[in-house]
Length: 96
Image (cartoon, rainbow, N blue to C red; front, side, top):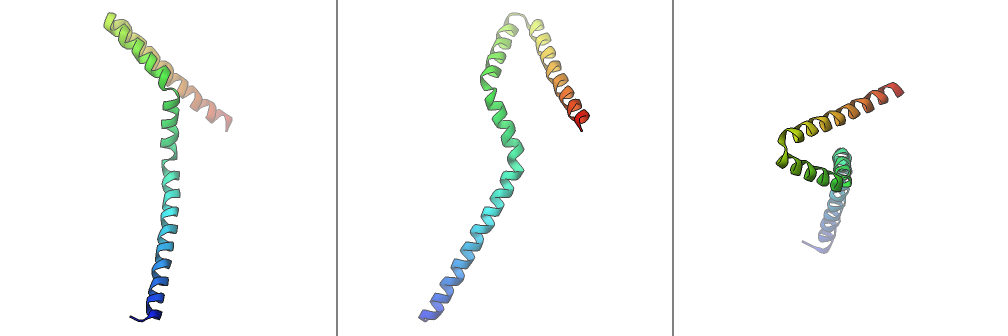
């Protein structure tokens, strides 16, 4: 292999590497767009981490003392969360 052929091969390999980097960058943007809702939800959970841990700790302590009361609190809390979620969805539909 002479010097010109090596230079041409090197140019060809550098062009392939550049194209692969561009393809990887494009794939990274697509991946970030696809996982954005999951990342947003995880950040929201982490934002509420301390209150959730405290709430579940109180619920665990209450369930150790009175299991029926803890179950009713859990049901009421779940119902309240579901009701708030449904109200928010209806509000969004009404705003359209």
